[in-house]
Amino acid sequence: MVINGDIMNKMIIDIDYYSDNTRISNSAIGWFLNKGPQYLRDMLDNKEEGLSGKFLELGTMIHEYILQPEEFWKDYEILDFDTPKAPQQKTFCECYANLLSTEPLESVDTLKIKAYRSSYSNSKKDEVVLDDATKLVDTYTNYIKYLRTKNFKNIISFADLNMLKNIKSNLENHVAAKKLLWPEDVESHNEFHINWKHPSSGIDCKSLIDRVILDHKNKVVTLIDLKTTSDAFNFKHSVEEYDYYRQLEFYFEALDWYFTNELGIDMSEYEKKAYIIAIQTNGNNQIRVFNMLNPEELSKRSEVISDALKGISYHINSGNWEHTREYYENDGIEELK
Image 1 (spheres, rainbow, N blue to C red):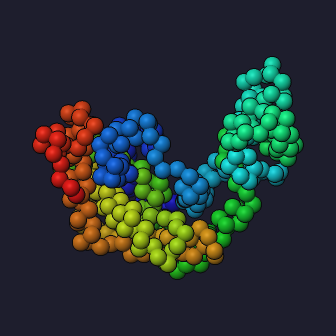
Image 2 (image 1 turned 180 degrees about the vertical axis):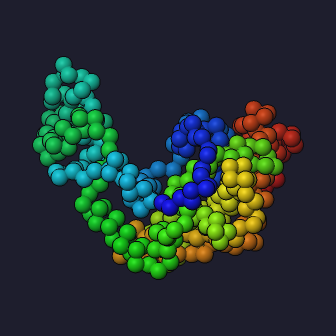
Image 3 (image 1 turned 90 degrees about the vertical axis):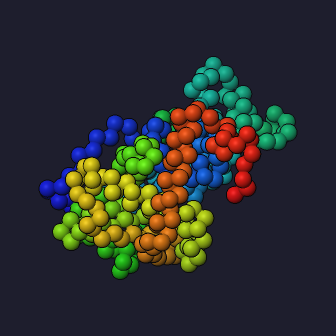
């Protein structure tokens, strides 16, 4: 990252982005708009898990490998022994390793049966379960020993690493992606965390921008967002499904606050650019770069964001979360939208 020596980020971040539930993110706006105020409240109170799964984990891994390479091997590692292939096998190994630590006086055979029954749904007799469990323990002995060392790094395979290397190579060989990810002699930030206040609603917000280039010499601010996809050729469907225009507008509003309050600069004097780098996670890991600066779409999302945050403000101030604001203000009657 090249930093302009005269312009530095002075923000003090006391709580990391993912732990701070006192502020509203673009994702939180999505929860509010798509699932209602109660779901948003539950998410902020950690009563809901939200989206999870292998695809999100894959996206996180790719983001860190490309945008934070200096941090990657602090969070990931490759094991040179067999690891579980199926989710139930992984659950069994984790459960068995935990039981060995928490129930040291119990017999090993009993622990194997307990771990197996916690991981698999079946009605097998104990002797059959013990036989199957023993085979799993024999197969994944080194992995179970590894789990007991309490090393909490994420495990990736050599196939994962080869995929990551291929993605990086494709990015480096893509004429637009290379310029956006590895420019020369310009200030840039990866995983740029901004805590800010939305002007019209007064709501405290937070944004974690994948990448931003601040070219103060030529007065250009460029937003770059990496998105993983299983189908880069039909990426428009993802833009519509996840409303990426709202996300980008939310980021521009965060940057506008940052320019005004941290840098003392009027961002309206800068040209705005926005791109999504779509990374296909299968096949040959195709890369496509899309121009996302659509003033009409972004303007529409500005209104959506403002209305949503004003709605959230109502629920915060009133403490009414079970229903929509319309329910409380119209004797339980709501318009179908």
